[in-house]
Length: 92
Image (cartoon, rainbow, N blue to C red):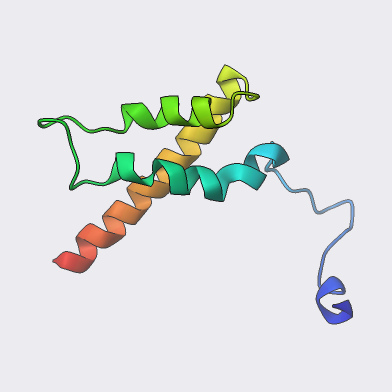
């Protein structure tokens, strides 16, 4: 553990621009529970189900503000869209 800790830059010049550590803690779980809504094989007619992902996040994390839900949804959507591009590219 000591070797890894010595590689961490704790100087004043190093600042992590990311914030919302609470959202970062729940991000992986949020991706997991919203995955079905971003599955391109599932749709309602020709409409995506991703609009339901936001509601699912709000229900799963009622303590979050609307702004926090919006930020979490944006990150989750970006994550899933990146995965679908990788999957689509692999099939070609």
